[in-house]
Structure formats: C-alpha cells, structure tokens
Image (cartoon, rainbow, N blue to C red; front, side, top):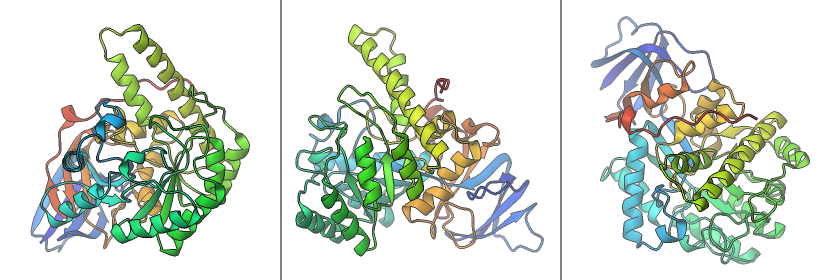
Length: 423
C-alpha cells in the first residue's frame, strides 16, 4: 500500500534545511520517496494523510535507556529485587511508552540477564507494541561493580573476552561496559573499574566480532582509558573526583576525547528529572533540601562539562538514561532541551536524536532519516520544532515501520525543562 503524507514542512534528520511544504511517500513499511512541495502529480497513492500545521520528521532515537527500571524514583537495588518476569513486564511497558511519545527506537544499555533480548523479540513478533529495541543484554562490570545485579560480572582478560563472546552468542547487538563505578551502592564512580589491559581486551574482542562498544565513564581516568581502548562511544563523560559528587573538568582529557572523534551521550535528563521531582514536593524535609541543593550543583556541573566538551569539539548524541531515578521513557525532549541549555543549537539537537544517533549506534541503514529505502519511522508534530523544541511534545502522528500508532497526547508527556541555569 502506497501512502502519501504531506505537511507544512519536512525535516529529514540530516541537518538539511526543511522542505516547506513537503511530502513523504511510504510503500508498505519503507520510505519510497521524499519531495519538496505538494504530492507529486501522477503519484498513484492508495491513501493520503494531510497534516496542515505540522512538521514531518524521523521517529526519535533514545540511545541510552534501561527498560527494566521504572523511572519512578525507586532505587536501583530495590528495582532489581523483582523477579525476571516483573522486569520483563516493565520493559514491555517502557517500550510502549517510548513509542507513544514518538521515540521509535530505543537502545537498551543494560538489563537483567536476557530480558532486553526477550522484549526485543516480542516486539519483532508483534506480540506487543513498542519501539524498536537495540540491546546489549547485561552490561559488563567488575565483580561487585556498577549494575552487578544484572549478571554481567567478569574479571581478568580471558574471562572478559569469554564474557563478550557469550553476550554475542546470547544476542547482543553491541557491548556495554561499566568503565567506572556509578549509582550502584558500594561502587566508586570517581575511579576506573577495569585495568587498561582489561578494557583493551573487551574492546578488541567486541571489534573482532563486529560489535560496537560503548563505555560508562564518570571520571576523567575512565574517559582516558576508553579513548586509549578506541571504543565507539562514551556514556556520561563525567569528571567526578570523590564520593561527594564533586567534579573538576580536565581540559587535556576533553581535548584528547575530542581528537579521538568518539561521540558522547550526555544523559542530562537524569538530573533535570530529579530536580523536577524534588521541586514538585509541597513540603521537603531538611534532608530533602540538602539533596536538592546537591543535585542543583551536580546539574550545573554536568551542563558546564557538556558545554566545555562541546566547545572542545566533542559530538553528542541524545540519550536520557530512562528508567534510572526519576527519568521516564518519554524524557527525550527534556534531554534535548537540556542539550540546548548546554549550548547546542536546536537543529544540532534534533539531528543528535535522529540521523546522527542512527549513525553512532549502527542503524543508519534502517532508521534516523527520511530517506528512500529506510524504514518508515516517521512522526508528525504540531508546529515547527526549529522555532520551538517543545513542539516535539505535540505529537500528531506516529508511524513505526509503516504502521500508524497512537500518540500518548501532550498531557501525558514529561513536562518542560526548568529554566536553563547560567553557564
């Protein structure tokens, strides 16, 4: 079935100027053609979808989610005490919420055992409705390291190579490594987790098996180790120096990261959602006031680091860390707004959540752009997101692999970011 979709403008996800007006032609589950102006004369379309006042663009891509986790403020340790069945159900629900917000692809960067593979397969089979899922399975971590309850513990060069091979056998489309500690109790986010030899072995084994590798890094030394290992992507890129959450940006590390060409996912939405949750309380305890003050400082530090890395030449993709703390699965627009707070242009941010995101995570032959031959992952939003990024919350139409899906509606989408702190 050939469907012509026309709107006031088309953003193709590549950073090109919009087509005003524009038309996208879909044949079955794929994009047949993209046109400036009205529907071409002589086009034998079986149906036409007319969306006046709207912008057509690729479905959004969230490059960093944890489908197992609820995003309700429940702690990680408490969340993973639930059985695999509950975690799988949570994942199905999360993938559905993401799709209803116009996020047609999510990359799950760490889940319990096989659960992310199972939800990926259930969506592929059509048993449930949700975003396309790119999955790594368990994130590789040291014994007792960040997210160890997911089952990804391994130590030593040979054991780590074996772990990579096992994950690939199980169905991992890429490899995720916890290069430093993190939010898991008892881990040290301010120092590297693996030795350089261990991280090099993981990266080498992933690349030998034609898998990309991304590394969680919350301190400068872990960033350097990841750069030296020639990984494909870095998550967070923090500069923590102690357990109190203090950060000190190291320009030499930032320059080395920029020179490597390795892109970063900033996950700025995590702090923004925590601030929103704490500020929404009518009454706060003294402990909560202290927590709010600490998170305000951390959010400011993260934005400062984002701006410094961007100025150094580091490229960013959009990813939220959805599931972690209060970060919901429709938070990608909030992430994009925070990226703009950090100095990115609106177009740069849109590309970071569409075409560039697809390039970085290895999906450029399937999604991320409105281009002939790619999957028909298309959303229509009311208004012009180049003028008002918040328009991305006004989703009028969602098409996922050529099938129309029901948008959640603006009232159900995560609220707008707070006013940008001064950088």
